[in-house]
Length: 317
Picture 1 (cartoon, rainbow, N blue to C red):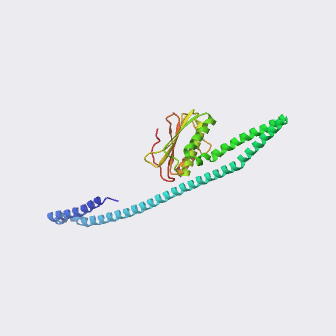
Picture 2 (tube, helix red, strand yellow):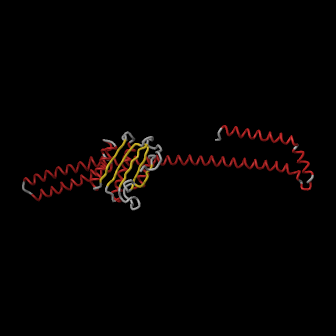
Picture 3 (spheres, rainbow, N blue to C red):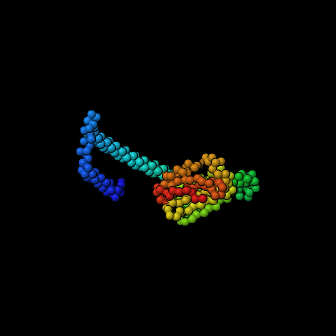
């Protein structure tokens, strides 16, 4: 919409210019002069030119009015299409959030069942095997003791695998101690398994956010570390989480000193596409950039309030 001052200026011009033209025409008797001039050229019918120009002006005004109406209809249709698209995007985002929430709920349920059923059975079998081993040794049955020891060792490996699955499905520390402790535990366990140094830095209070935000950031860190172990060839990784100043966004970065993106082909898990979709569902976004350590930086920026637009901008170096 045009400013009020511009509208007033246009009205003044439309009013003043015709008035000045009338005064000028009256002063010089413009119509009489034109009539005198056209009479000398009656053979050319120039005396009809004035009315023809009036009709032409009316046609041009009608043409402009038609184009203005069409432009208004097009603008209304475009605005309606944009509103419909925004609603569709919002609905898709909400659907993605619900799917992620259902996925996390299912993971939590499976983790509880594994803990309550399989893990407890592993502990029971280990206790029974240890008892059989002790009894066999006391009775001088080395074969039976060795078999019981093998069972106990196999159960220990199975129990360790179950604990690993429980951590990947739903880390208990995330609910008990919060996001910061979970990231430290994730980095520590990942570093021990893969022999790659991983440091963690958390700035600001990041545990007062919604559960789905905490889970999303944890999953991004988890997938990014998995990709580093599989494809980067790195020797050191830095994981950082900070509340950005001046915004309501959280920024998670995973930097490595490996080969960088061109030589990578991350497959497994959610992958880069899955991480980006997880961030987009919460109103955030995922960015890839060169890391100051020489490898790849994975940066996930997400609003502390789910669904709110996150601050845009380049990934800080």
